[in-house]
Length: 226
Image (tube, rainbow, N blue to C red; front, side, top):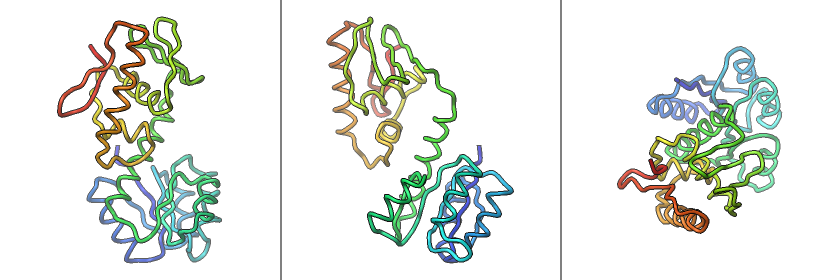
């Protein structure tokens, strides 16, 4: 799918630079240079994500954010020179999925866009409430896990790692895939963090079952034991 991203940014240089980088990364782009122009685009065509500046002519980003959310169920990343904690918390509370302060590294922006698009796709995919593999069962609605009917205590990240692995039992997930999903953040080579969490999961499963559940695919990542 060719994801189309709406850039709402009044600084021509930043808008054009961002659009060029996103196109090179394989995204489609629509450029708006004011809040009112951005709203017109939102009203007439679908997007996968919006990059939203705050200090805009016509309509500022704070006023535009709720209108975007009301018209399209899509993630919004605020990109602004405003760097106060109150501003960030306020926008995230108002519905923005992420907040990036200017000046920014374009590679980080592209990575954050990928995280949000993947996360949104997961929420729209209609996952079942229960995931099962062998005698391991995860209940997504109650955030509980059992093996042979015995409850096991998992941290949020441990649960999310198992959720990802159980969602596609045949697939090998890279450490970046796992980190992006379980931590809702950008992977920056956190090999030790992933390895520790996988080790902890294995220990907890081993305590209640003799079966092996997770195998390492060297040089690639992890998957469920076939």
